Image 1: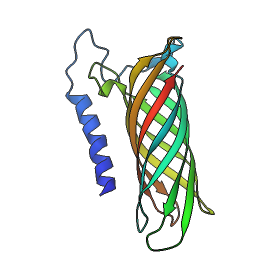
Image 2 (image 1 turned 60 degrees about the horizontal axis):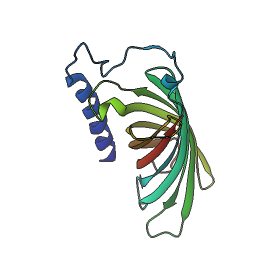
Image 3 (image 1 turned 120 degrees about the vertical axis):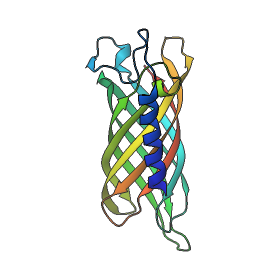
Length: 187
């Protein structure tokens, strides 16, 4: 069910982008790929994520937290990394493991004039995942948004956002559907 939810959200984001009408004044939901020419276009950021981890199988839902960093080396593509940790509590078993992941991430950043969509992204993350003493390789399709909420005194932005991802692992450890809220500082 979680996989279907993620696919529905990704499809909704894509269909919303295609359904938008364009005008001469608008950049467009799908920005034209081009080299970054200003410091602002790099979109260098650092953020804190807090959310829910819903593992498959007989595991309980748990809170998770992490940090992420990233930038946009070529418009509209972003790269970054995230580190997150969460508890993996198995139902009716006294076997609690800590899951920690270090994922590299690539994203496609939308644009245009639609309020939430212009601050949205879709992407893919991959990297090592440690659950208890088991090392895996994780792969996670993801989507989310970061809406600017405040302008700092130095001209930088502070954003509030959310993201969802489904983490697939290479071994018998549980896959997980993850949702999180994010606060990010944009340099």
